[in-house]
Image (cartoon, rainbow, N blue to C red; front, side, top):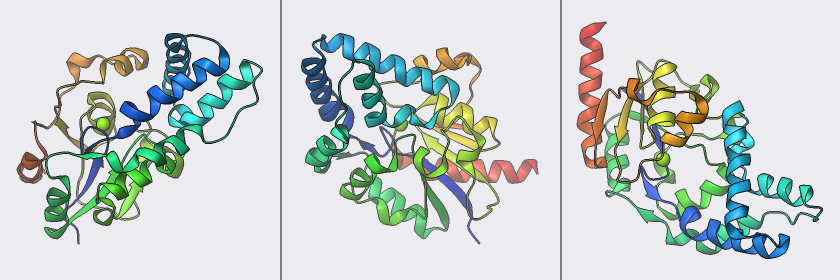
Length: 239
Ligand SMILES: [Mg+2]
């Protein structure tokens, strides 16, 4: 029997993914040359397509190569497949691990927690990142849009193959890791990082940020275990 099912977000929670820093700028540059438009314009079109899909809950919001192929087709250019994926595979090993994440996950696993990797990123992109970061072995399940067929904004994302006494989400995004998990009955630990990324999503999804209350807030993964224990003992008292 597991003590709790813990959903761990990946990007900016456990790791800094090279995707945003190294892959996206390079691909935008390439696309700008191919289509003869500025990099800013590429970014603008790309973001608009991404956000529109997030708004309607389309999992392909995070299939970057799909979005790119849409852009190419609309501009009368024959799309080349897997541009993002190939670029990512070149730089995957430069992933940066945060707060000694492997040790934190190992300890939680050994203490009887069932760990689920919970990411809006497609598994086809995240797999090499998780592997290179040395985190894959700690997760019993992967929840991603290409595996579940939905985003973190949908209840289907939080189904697991076992039932636990309690499900807890851990992540840095106030919308996807706190608001939605709580909406679907999970508890939520907000990992507050220096860069906050929830605001834009809250706006397009019509969510009032001031009403979102995490069950705990931490600034480092080293504080997650204590936060989990206090949520578990708190929920026992109330049941
Ligand atoms: Mg994140």
